[in-house]
Length: 495
Ligand SMILES: Cc1cc2nc3c(=O)[nH]c(=O)nc-3n(C[C@H](O)[C@H](O)[C@H](O)COP(=O)(O)OP(=O)(O)OC[C@H]3O[C@@H](n4cnc5c(N)ncnc54)[C@H](O)[C@@H]3O)c2cc1C
Image (cartoon, rainbow, N blue to C red):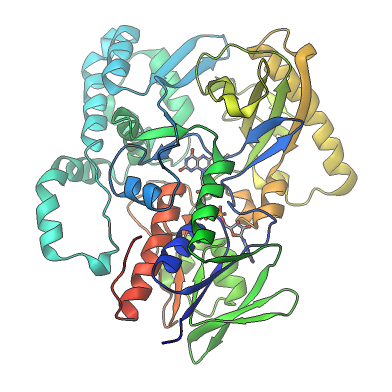
């Protein structure tokens, strides 16, 4: 029997995952990746012996559950990988230098919060209980098409407390949720509303986030994003898969409503029995497929759902060891600016001293990130862009001095990656590095992996579920191959 061919557009984590499972199941598998390295958003870059990581802060599934199985199957986790679970999730400083800590362990955080705002004890306990319940969430291991009624019935009792949280808060924003808590302490209100309010950011996303940390199931993998993706590449190639780098897909070939392959920007045609779209969702649906296969839901999502605000990342190579206090420090001072960006969400500083692979011994890699709306970037080019980068460098050093006084004289490398950099290397729409923002409107929704009337084509990746992230990217990669195996009446296997 001749092998059937699957072409996968994009070698990010979704494409690599799809590739691994496709190769495991005996398909002739080729990933087309436009960049010279795989990984997509899950990447890092080296500058003068420093490594500046872009993506990995936390990975849901580092200890157990359906995501954990995927990380083991795709070689993201193996006997050699070391998972780091931080005690502190974030340390937040307000404009007066007051400190607020979010602990990863809910019990620890609850104790801290009750000491911080004793008058709000009842509300704090209620919020922490909601979070504890969310920690019971177990993601499904199969796509809906594979689930039997028995599977639903067996997990239902376990999921009851979570379903209650989802029912009560699924359509609330963080701000709505904090209102229900009726907090009295002004400082606590100012941090919570300041950090998570002021937008439609979903209450559930906030509640669930700490649930994962509490179970120690959202760790950081030593080495960060680059080796993460490379371990997947290694597994894929070992299984006989092929990655074609520096080639961009322009069009998906469709005949009689059946995907038949892809056409690259250099005109090359690659025929296939199945195509998996694991690149930017908008480009795939509206450009590569010319918007011919959309539903009302898809159109609504791409027209109306909010996107993540893109980031500017300023990375510093520091010629000395800088003591590590918390993995993520957020300076929540909205009076500040960097370059043309007003820091409405403040800025964060990540000191990678906890990961010895990021800098030579005795030195430290520090990364500053801040949100910067795409509107500010979409029309800036040439000299104006270079000028903006120079201003960013100056302003970012000033901000780093606020956190680490006297550090400037030890800076030996500075690297700036803007939303334009992300778009240039990965094609992600408007620099929305995690796709659709989880809001009160979309948190309970997801987009289908198939497109109406189009056969032999599957979508995978972060654009299917608001909130994006590595786990749904890898999981939809796996699910796309499960669906192809079902169509081929072939048993899906994992090796
Ligand atoms: C700063 C930052 C921090 C993050 N932190 C976390 C975190 O801590 N935990 C977490 O779970 N997630 C995190 N994420 C999100 C996570 O990185 C993404 O959700 C995930 O990597 C998306 O994977 P993907 O494969 O769906 O898409 P992408 O990574 O965007 O991959 C798409 C791939 O397709 C390629 N491509 C695009 N167009 C074409 C074309 N026409 N032809 C060929 N190839 C094409 C691109 O080059 C890219 O490699 C973070 C992201 C960023 C940027």
